[in-house]
Length: 315
Ligand code: NDP
Image (tube, rainbow, N blue to C red; front, side):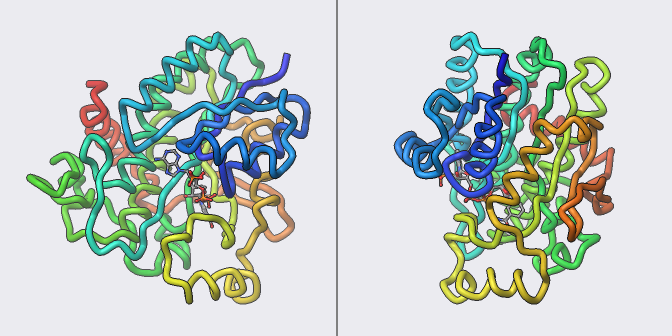
């Protein structure tokens, strides 16, 4: 049978390119988990994904209620689940004030981390039950959260501190809207959320790899400077960022190439090792990359897991 893969945020950018790459192999049925149903349908058509190779299902990660509904609907569909790709994200670098999810968490961390945390926890038993030879859970990371890299050292740097803002509910009322309890900064909130994604992947690996046989991975696909992720940025940035990445840092990858990379992490038989943060070198060969000290801090990962469980209502 075909494999079934859920990809969040498959209506644009990396998620769409990955959906296309997997669907085109003829070996995968892609469940596009998207907040905008019509946009997802149009996107699938526009890149030519064959009708029989995808299903759009509604998921708004900025609402835990929507996450639970999505999981119920998916379970009732009776489809086995063989791979889950947590890809969707928002980036609000110019926001002056925090905005919030339905449950009142700062929007970047609430969507990118907490929404995906609940989704992947609720779907883990489906992955475990699948009889597919290789079951995988992938959480897309980023270089920007990694302070051991040049890109990760552009201020404001990611820093989760002692998680006091998160533990306080990240609601800007009786706690800060930032994980570390500091002043709101939209660019930092995104980077912090990516550190959470990478810590969560490793904590999943420690807690569940042996027991479930599921492979847990994260990756940095390269700088895909053309995606919608930068839609909130100032126009001059949006104009200069792609050529800067192409010619100066040379970290630029096309959406198509990045989609092929993520598709490898989903299905390539050589990328089965669990607990790995994948990157690609200049010749587009994959390698196991190192994470920054904070993004590989096991104690922080455990604490983040426990605080997140409380916030999403799992503990
Ligand atoms: P895009 O903005 O193109 O794609 C993000 C997707 O997430 C969109 O489909 C968007 O939906 C969806 N999304 C946003 N909010 C929600 C929500 N509340 N519920 C459901 N879906 C939502 O950006 P990219 O393709 O660049 O980003 C994809 C991933 O790649 C992210 O995890 C990002 O951190 C990561 N990444 C990107 C890099 C880059 O250079 N672009 C580099 C490193 C990592 P909609 O289509 O409706 O807007």
